[in-house]
Image (cartoon, rainbow, N blue to C red; front, side):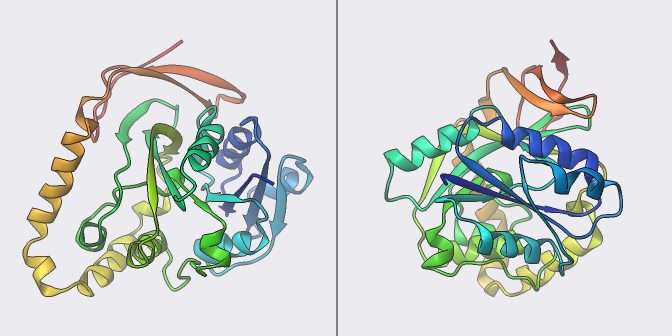
Length: 282
């Protein structure tokens, strides 16, 4: 098996259907493991019977517990996790697989991510940068989005880099800090692979995110707190030099609530990072 994609799920039936469809049409050898925490929103009416996924319905202690369970079951050489409110763009996994083949030393490949609204319209872009330790530690945002992170199974089998289940929302940040500490080789793909949908009910909007962020930042060295503005400025300069603020308009295809079985193609008009924009549908 070339790819294993793990999706933690709880009461997200409509969005999960779009997620599953986006993995199934990638055109590569892939197993899609869905770890559902006994959802009662209709998910059980279809998920266990969907031949495109390996569904495991069992209670978990949170998202990262569900992801770890999926990681232990995964057999693919390349692994990633994709939340129910996220999707892959067409050809994403093939591009990631090619990148790993061309760069056998890389253990992690980082793709760019689009943020869209409930109708699929582009809101902003999150082009990946190789994470640095102190920016990851003290800033408000990761320099990568979790749905754009792909890694070899060796991270689990040889390095034992599972997610810290004590965290409910920031386990991916803590996990990335572990990768940086162990000097895991990372490679930028330089292409958009994934979509994150702002549904209005995303876990990242909860108050617990701020609590966990404050707790994590408090563990950083005092000098890092003092120079935090410089750390953030350095990150923004890296993005500027990489051309992230000058993205040209482009077309993208995704599944929507109005079109859950067929991808819809849209144009992002003059998309700029962290800025809302007008989109046109074809």
